[in-house]
Length: 328
Picture 1 (tube, rainbow, N blue to C red):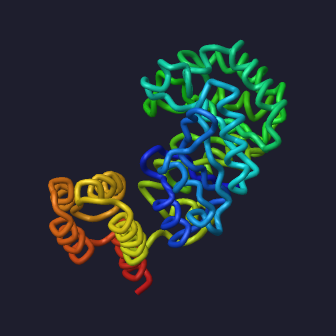
Picture 2: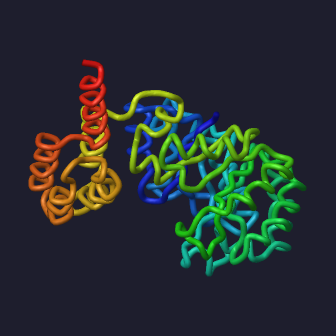
């Protein structure tokens, strides 16, 4: 089973990816949050930092491009090729209204004729591997039948399918029946994306689709950085690993970002996912959320790690006590 890290704008930047890779590993590909092309394929300072080879050392990193303009896509792909990349990903899945109303991301799915012409041009003119990350459609999963017919016309490196439509956002149950059409009919390799939060979720998916050999996880990994390792049969995260993971990111943000507010914005977002891993997490999450100075934040984090345990470790310890009782 191949496992990919999903690109999440503003969260899974190079600082996060590097800490995840060094502390937990387990991913075959690390997708870089989307680049929004501007004139002549130039990259912003943030985008340059995110794709610099030294910031992705050891990883198979794949930059993602968000655009509806074929020329912009081609110019950006050529720029990325100069940095040593041989694969790019087209974002046809972002459900954000600000993106969709401009006809980008999932909004492009509502214009199949334009999308077909766009794909024809980029596949003719780009000398790179191109994968697509898509949703099933804008409003109705029945739209996917026509979209898949379009995708099948081109030599995709792979088709990554988030099994929801745009209007679902990240709510509602993934539409697995429609995803099954991709598994059966797609001419390119298929990767599943959507609500992989535990190793059991992956097992259930494999039971439903025995030929599926690739998944992508984003928010599941934010909630549990050791998820890919667990899917591969490895150990859950330990508190010491989470501390190292946190410290690696925090120290790098302190070096790269100016001002407590910018640093804490990034860390608070991280804790909105990580906090539920800990016992009695709500009071510490509240302290972290209210912190306006790094020193106050550091004290709250130190208290959390010093006083609480990972819920998984407590559950495992309780189970060991029960087994010891019955075996005594």
